Image (tube, rainbow, N blue to C red; front, side):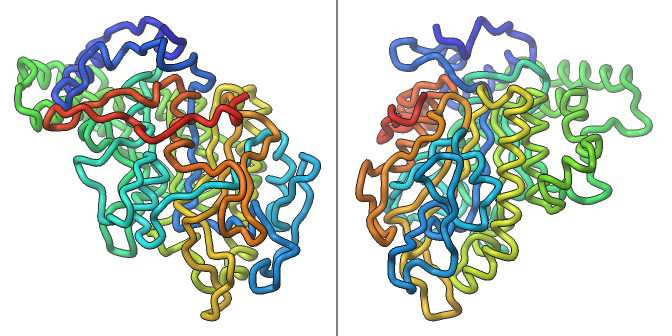
Length: 449
């Protein structure tokens, strides 16, 4: 039996969770046991995803082409990183000093070039369903955090899976994007969502605080009454999910570790300044605090909707230079610094990723770059991945992989292996049909240290 599931004790909370999971097709054995023949021991206990929603420009961040024609190379110049021979864009100077801790993948590709929703779903689950867009659905494959939270419940009473600071929409006013939620695992496995701005002076999560007229003794009496009224585990799936969700809510209300983690005001002002006094920088800082409290997977979605931030069809260079890259550089570099300094990076996997890249050729409609799924980049750090390594390469204009092409399924399979979850784990959908977790993904062996 591998490291991730070392004989967990079955508390009432875990039994409720396991009971609910059985109604969505996961038996108790599948919840708590891993097949040693199908996975290696976990090299990471936690995962932080910083998802640059909308499609960050690989050509201006991680894979510059200084020898290409002006309409390809753009305005930014390459700068050296802490790994000889590896360059970043000039507006990532702080992150460049951490390249010796990272694996940079420059040969990503998939089939989705239009629908952000489908590209996000592909990037976060490894399931490439082409241009089938639309919002999150109950029959979606689950988010990484939903799976890991089921396989490896936290040791402390904190949510296993947290999403912040937005439920990103597919366009302003559109439906929530898929890939962030539990899908076929059922709503009790959805992430705990933080929708308040951690940068706000009055940031707090009042839902974690008992009302003024409810003391702990009274709350415990209410909890016991609710349990008696609930009776035996219901056979109806919806009622089972409701019971599991209610149990989770009771747990969160009595979880001091979570209440302490969200007290971001306890961080020294200099640390908060270093991450950036904006909603994204402070969300990344909060992600670090949640990992320290025991949360398994935290995902920072860097956009309220798909078109709001990294979707730079126009003013690509102005927006990157003046807003997006300085904020990302500060937050990403500070996260890696703090995790390393606190001895957490070895067991915390960090993924800086997006839904696709941007076109090699700059468009004529406001100096922008459009969607480009045929080749793009992402970065991994810590948690067992190889340090100071570049995997794959793009061609001379950053348009197609020229060496070691990689798909999102391969990256997701690699992440699951680092977290001690077999990528070929069998799930069951609502009709009790077997579904492989990442059927098309092969872990990138060269990228794991």
